[in-house]
Every structure is written in C-alpha cells, then in structure tokens.
Image (cartoon, rainbow over all chains, first blue to last red; front, side, top):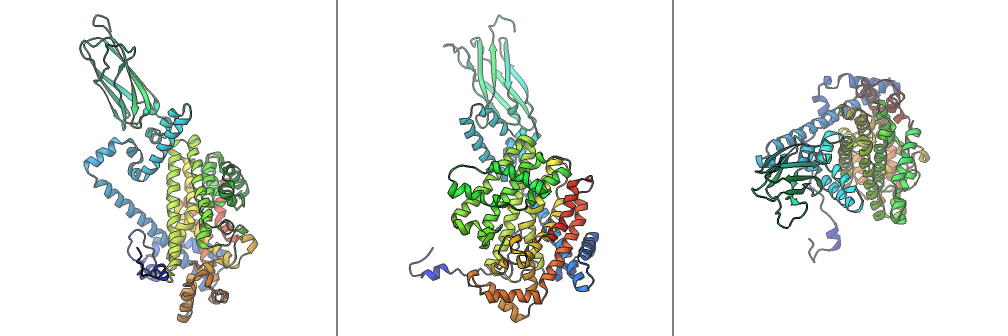
Length: 271
Length: 333
C-alpha cells in the first residue's frame, strides 16, 4: 500500500531484509557453522573409503604431488559428503514430521480418508496429489464428453485400483442380500474399472415401465474400496408387482460402472 | 552413445512440439531451444540407466523426452533470470522475443513435458507412470529450490556463501535434473520400482557437482564457440561460483570490500575494468586451479559411488557409458 506523499523513488526503493547470513535454511535446520567448524566436528569415519577413493581418483587424474592441491581435493570431497549427509538427514526429519502429523489425525479424518479410495492409493502423498487428481478428473471427464467410447476409458484411468494394482484392475467381489416373500433373481454386472471406486446404486425402475409398478427403492450398495468388495442389499415389499427392475451403479464421479437387475416373480412361480 | 540416444530422443520429442497457431508468438519459440541441439546428456543418461538395468530404449524414451523438454523450459527461464545473452551459440530467446513472450514459451514448454509422462501409461502401466510423475515433481521442486538459493544470494548480495552452501545449491539446482532424476527414473522403469532409488542421489550429486564446476570453469576460460554462451558471463551476473567463493576466502579485507561493492551494483553498471580485476584476482589466488582440483576430487568420488549405485548390474555398453561419465564431464571443452 502506498501513500500519496511517497515519491516514486521511495516507493520503488525496498528496504533490504534484515538478515545476518545467507538464506539457506529451507527446512528449519539449525544455523550452519563454517566449513572449518563442521569439518572438525565430523568424524572422518563417516565418509571412510568414499572420500579416500575420491581423493585418490582426483589426485591421480591431476597427477597431484603437492600438499596444496591434495588438500583442495580432500576438502572438496569431504565437504560434498557432509552436504549430502545433511541433506539426507533433513529429508528424514521432514518425513518423520509428516508421519507424526499423520498420526495426529483425528478418527473422523482417518475415516474420511479411509473411505476415499484416492487417499488410500496415494497414502501420505494424497494431499499433495489432490490438485493433480482433480486436474486429471476434469481432463478425463471433458474428454469423455467429446470422444465416443471415451467415457469407459476415462473411468478406467480414474480408477485408483488401476494405480494401486500396477496393471489391469480386478472386478470387485459381490455379495448380495435379498429380502422378498416372492421368488426373486438378482443379476449384477460390474465393469473391471469399478474396482476400488466408491459405488452407489440408483433406485430400480421397472424395465417395461408398467404404470402400476413402483420402482424398488429399498436397495443399497456398500463398497469397500480397500478390499475391492461390494455388498448389495435389496428388499422387495410384499405384494410388489412382478417384473424386471433395473438401475445403474455409479461411482463417486457419476460414471456408470455397472447395472443391477432384479427379476421379481409371481408368488406362485418357482424361483 | 550421446548421439544415438540423443538422436532418438529428439526424433520423438519433435512429435510433442505442436505445429499449429499461434506459431510466431508461441510454438515456433517453444521449439527454438530444442532445435538448437545440445548434447542430450540427461535423456541419454536416463535411457542408458534403463538399459543397464535390463530395460529397453522404448521403455525409457517418453521419460527421456520429458526430461529434455523440462530442461529446455528451465533454460529459457534461467536465461531470463541470469540475464544471459546467448544460448547454444545464438541469442537467448528473451533477447530476440522479449521477456514476457519468452516466459510464456518457457511455461508452455514445461507443460508440454507432462504429455509424454501421461503417455507413459500405455507402455509402462499406470503405476509406473504415476511413480515417474512423482519423481518428476520432486526433481522440479528440488531444482526450483536450488535456483531460488542462487537467485536470492545474488539479489541480496550475500557474500559469505561457503563451499558447503554452494554444493547444496548445486545439488538442488543442477544435480537433480542432470543426473539424479535421469538415473532414478531409468532404474525405476527397468526394475518396476524394485530397486532402492536413494543410492542414485549420492552418485548423481557428485557427478553433477563436478559437471557444474567444470561448466563454471568453461564460462571463464572455455572456447566461446563450443561453450555456446558469453565467456565471463558468470562474473557479470555475480553468480556465486566456487571460484568466486574461493576468491572471497582468499582476498584481503580491502579486496573483499571492493568485490562486495562491485557485486552490489546492477549488472549493467558493473564496469568492464572491474570485471577484469576480478578475473585477475582469481588468477592471482589460483581460484581456478583450486576449483579444478575440487571438480576432479568430486569426479573421483563419483566413480567410487558409481560402483555402489550400479552394484549387481551386469557389464554392458550402457553401464560402461555411465561409468565413464565422471571423466567425461571433466574433459568437456
């Protein structure tokens, strides 16, 4: 924010940041000591033969004979190993902090993530991958709008089981629970791309669209993305008109992943 | 082998450069740096590592293309940030097209690099394709952090940068894209993730650091035509090279003050005779000789680490090619 009485040059002139040394502390590591201090603090055995080999190889290549050159090679290689060790140590600390944050998650956070197959697929990377996942989702969905047959490809691409399994996905295992006074036959068709997705089923409409046949609404589908299992529960009300009822199974993105068909027989017929 | 793998990379890369409008403001510019050539060191290293671990060139080619595209995208932005005048023997893109258009071309080139990574899914499967994408994200982040360190030092005229700071900056800015990422991705592709990738950081760091120091040396005393950039540009730009850091360490108090004052002025305001004075002081304190010795030591250590990184890998033309790289980076003219 500038004020009217500031001159242009004043506004353009930025006060230098207060600091006492180079900006090089990216991950909260303690302030660095000088090279000499650090070199003195690091036991030689940390680097061992690697430094010796590096020093020897460098000296051979240069035909080093004097102590000055020998010292430069040795100091350079030793500093490089020190930088590497610090770099790796900071990476480990960052990973541990991340694990600790994950452990602090509340049960509801955990449950939410547990239910999200993408969170399972990416594990701790899930938050970082969220923008990319969203981008890919938009891309595949927009692609499927314009390309014939692309919808199925898009849904396969977006199936986390495809990513987790490292290859072709396996069709989920289905169990059914049917409550009906009359003989009833249930058929479920699921695409392999449904694996690992959060699925739901729409109400089952009468296939022939009989005017007096209400849809079957007491139908639910639970999907366990982690175990790649699906459990369908259907209840047919007593006296419900016979006939064939069907509804789509969709994933959390609204893509059709299969179909449920329930054939309700007349009370006197054989199942 | 650089010719062979570089040629293969370039031919596939050409398919990813759109031949459509807007040409004059974007796609011709996007294609400019890749078409200027270059050694294709990074994609070649990726392909060679894949083959050394038992994979094929076809397995690695799309990842190699992506690496080369990202490298070229970063060069466009680097040239702007460094105010470089030349790239691969021709004027830098922003010198001919202007900074805004060049920045946009760099952005587009970096985004184009994702298409081959997405296309990896067809040959490598979704799991490996995703792992390579993750590796690419990490490499890009490390490179940006390293570049930020260097740019920050120059902006704030930080003059107490030590050798360890320099090496950490190089680890991030140079080594990840140059060597760590290509070897990690190559091994990942060939072994389908069965090999521990951490081993490649140490090898890639030592190799890349030797490469960077040699590159900085060439900037001072190389063959202008072969080097492809203006000689002495690093001093003009105030880059914290190992030679400059050594000069700060060796200089007297008055020399250090003079040096700080020079680096604190805008690039365009740095007098030629002062630049010549810096160069003369570097000679006087043998900063160049010192840096060369360090580079040789790092290359020697890289040879040692190669044995660890490629342990258990059977002898092959590709393995021998990678083993020879530490010496090759020092022999570049």
